[in-house]
Length: 473
Ligand code: BGP
Image (tube, rainbow, N blue to C red; front, side):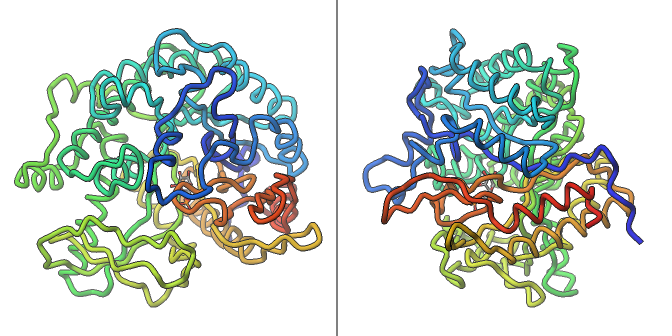
């Protein structure tokens, strides 16, 4: 028997500025590293920039009206740093503040709780050029100043803040795999930049607490638990190593202010460990969040690796052609293998509802912090036919995940709410516009006229019912 969802449960949906807004140069907005990255010569990004995206900047009232029709209780969005500070710092841009102020007011008019992400990857290009972005300690101060302006301007109306979105993703892709800006492939630089991002995260949380603002703050983290392929003790050890390296290396710092000793020891041996001063240690300890934001998509299954070298190629399937991803290996740690019990999407992401229960249980038993599920969803091809989109696969995916969340809550995990990814269809960073996640279809048909019209999918009506019945449908 499952406990019912609490009355206060935040039934939500999520998005991020670069993926929906468009209007990339309007109202004094500065250029971000993503604006630049997708337009480099020889880029693999074709027709997949965020210049127009789904034009949310001009259509936010229409979008919020759809959220109200669906019955959302919460909406997670991000603020583009370069709208507030076109050059990353200096004088705040009033037009940028006004845009988000109007969006927040519009949400509140329909009783939709805004959940505001302060950083969802679109760093002002000026800070990259000036001092190398996340590789310079100067960013700690600039990021804190930017966040503080947001707290001062909006905390009378905002109760939930997400500090950094998926630090593990933007740091590893940006500095190890080279697939996100600034396109670096250097593990030493990656661990150094990552440490600075930790400091920036802690500094913002500390500023929030010291400022006495009302509400709660925490980082969102992409946590997909790992399984051992079988009970071979070597594979079980590989599972532990993988989770420490890929997840607890971040989550431990957020929740306890300390790096896991095992990973740090390995990094020291490899001469990759970041420099952590006494002052850093204190800052990390003073920036403990109120909740962990969980972005959950899939799990991994691992065997032990005996290989020595890293190919630098994560072998991801960004084409949407099923079965094209390559086997990933972290040398001397683990080899990622197919899990015979789990289905995969067309982008080769495993579909594993019980995995979210395992993620929630792990966070609870390790950190005893509440969790806000800030992302979860299915990226698939959708087909618009006579104004309708039949997406039973998405309904099934979300329904099964919600059931496991309810089970985790029944187990005793504190879950504040659930934001599906995403509300409208939007830009997928590495997959363009064909990989769709929304309850609302956006017509971005590049072959005919791109109307950007919105259409409600079947999953829209399904989620509407879920919310109406508080999960008891
Ligand atoms: C998360 C990001 C989101 C979103 C999502 C889906 O990592 O926080 O911004 O993009 O993943 O991923 P993708 O677009 O690669 O399918």
